[in-house]
Length: 239
Image (cartoon, rainbow, N blue to C red; front, side, top):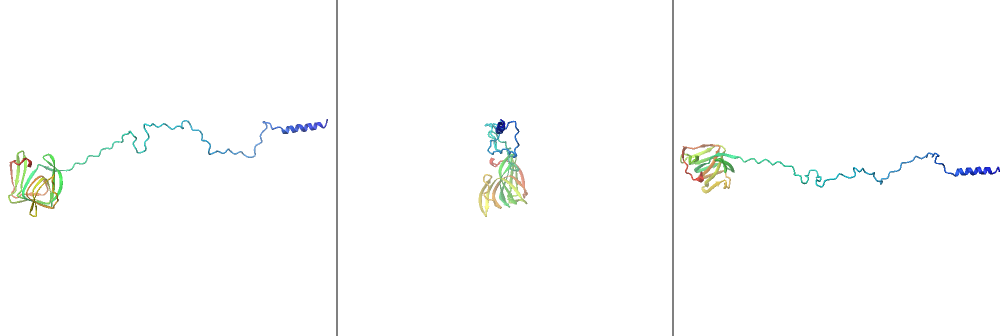
């Protein structure tokens, strides 16, 4: 009887040792600190907000144009029109007058081209000459001063009138006569439509008729000048 009690006590101790610990028992702390779980680079990104997941719609009728370009259907800004060109200068004048001479010499001559001149209130094309001096033999000048009336200024027959000194500008509608080249007379008829073909520094004309609109510069000297007012009987095309 006495021997069985110790065996029973040993059996109870063995049963208690084999049972798992109760959940109410405290868990002993680990001697090694726990490390945070590593983050995987291939992990899925967090979900986006529903307000930013869809881009704002773009209207197909008004696409966004690149910087510096005009969107289709939009009129480009208007560019101010350039100012009109300045009008060409018009030579002075007034009324046409006619010079006739048996001989006309032009020194220091330069043909400046075809220009506009004001004649009887209208702009016409004329020839512009410049010269250093003029010699006119048997000068006769006529000009219409009123309808059917003309003024005539004539030098003494056989005399030579002069225009000098300095720069002389002569605006001519027509120069008709004979160009004297070393005694050879060549008929010429110069107008704005048929200007001189060459520019010579000196020219001599004989039996010349010159229709002018203006003469600027120099002093006209007419030996034995005679001035008279007579009825205008000139042909219509010469008026």
